[in-house]
Image 1 (tube, helix red, strand yellow):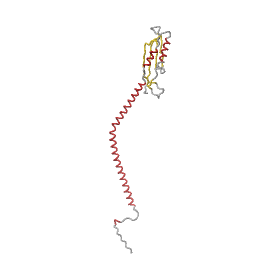
Image 2 (image 1 turned 90 degrees about the horizontal axis):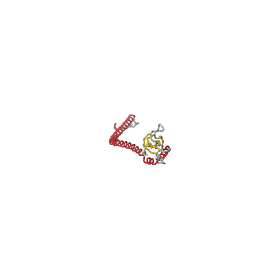
Image 3 (image 1 turned 180 degrees about the horizontal axis):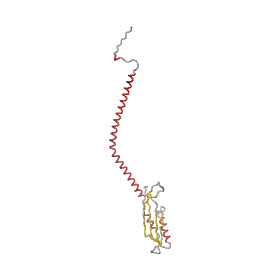
Image 4 (image 1 turned 120 degrees about the horizontal axis):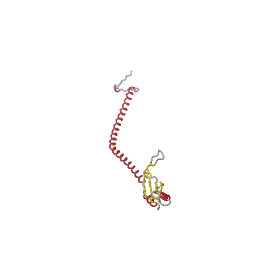
Length: 210
C-alpha cells in the first residue's frame, strides 16, 4: 500500500499537461490589445507632433507671406522696367543722325539745280510679315522729299546726277537705299527751267535692343 501525501496548496498547483486553449486565447487577446494600444498611442503622439509642426509652419508663413508678396511686386516692377528699358534701347539703337545726309546733300546739288523745298522724315511703321505665323515687327525708316528747279539744255541729266549723288551719300553704307524721280516738268512761270521732285528712302531699322 502506497501513501501519497500532497503538500501543495490549491493556489500553488500548476497545470502539468499541454497548454489549454483558454490560455492561448487569453494570451492572443492580451497581445492584440497591447499592440492596438501601442498603435493608438503612436497615432496620438504623431498627431500631436504634426499639429505642433503645422502651428509652427503657419506662424512662419504668416511672417514670410508679406515678404513674399513684396518680393513678387518687386520682381514684377523689375520685369516691367526691363521691358521699358529694352524698348528705349531699341529706339536709341535705331536712331538716325541727319548730319551725314544733310552734309552729303549740300555737296551733291549740281550748280544747275536749285532746291526750293525739302521734307525730311524718320517714319515708324510695322514691317509686313512674310507669313501668318510671323509677328509684324516695328521699324524706322528715313525719307526725304526734294523739290527743286533744274536749268540747262538737258535738265533731266542734272536731276539724274543729283539722284546718283544722293544714292552715294555715306558709301559704302549708303544713307539712302532708294532714290526715285517723282516727276520732272517745265516750269510754267519760267520756260528755261524745269521743276522736279525726288524721293529718297533709307533701309529699315528694326526697333529692338542690340
